[in-house]
Image (tube, rainbow, N blue to C red; front, side):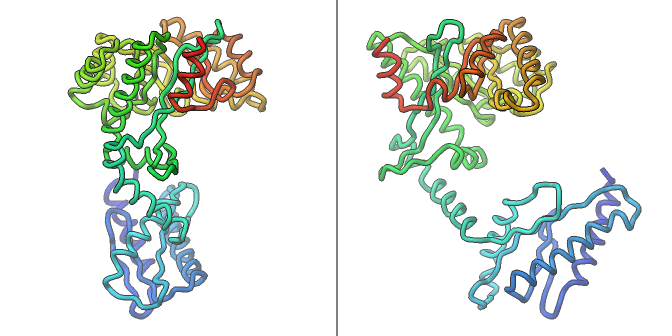
Length: 383
């Protein structure tokens, strides 16, 4: 925004401000990019906070002093040598701890300081455990399929179900997706996880067909890394052929945020998927920044409206949200796209969705996510 020369000068000026704050036997270094490391010779958290606040306030004032209309925010992650026996061998550990603390801030609205603590340590330890155990977990089928039904709002019948994954360890403890999915997305393991879930969905379809049950289409979430692979469509076809299930029985749910990164490439993959018989759904629509123009340029089978739309009903934003949802659903229908509302929890919400001709509802009003065996007993054996 400011140009390289001005930005570099700001970094140099910030360095001067940090150097001024140093005491005897303390040091500063530029760690990387716009990150700096400071070594203070104190373990007193109040003293550390006070000194850092003085530094951050001084650095935040730099643009104004240079007559630059730009707000500068700083974020600090702090690790303390608790036993007082500081050594150079601890530097790597403390840097890592400070970085872990730093990840808990960065709100973008104010200068912030976070100290590495027990809670962060526990979270870091859990992430290491998950990463160390993920390969074994997929081999031993510790990842279990849960299903949440989608209800046809016009007929009251169950239209299909979305697969949701739960990690159940051998000791019975359950790990929920929000604890491991972000990790898998960052380390690339989500590719294996997504294909594993596709295979589990095909196994279910094969079982239901063999038992003569009514077949429901099953939705499976797909991550960006998998969706962008060159042999993605061929890999999916190999899995469905392995279990001899029709491609039409799978709905591939792609997060809204994935779609706006490379629209031409995305559309090309969608066309290949639909040509092969798969259905494609845009998940969590409304949670990001996809424009109507982007949405209408996609060759989709299904649009899932994010739960935040329904959460506004009963608030001051109710009228606007209802109008927006009605317009979105009308637009989707004009393109022949099926609509699903997520997060349906009350009869009032259901009645509203019926009034605007939404096709499907999904949420706790009908069922929470349940194990595949329970879903089969509740919705298939009794039908």
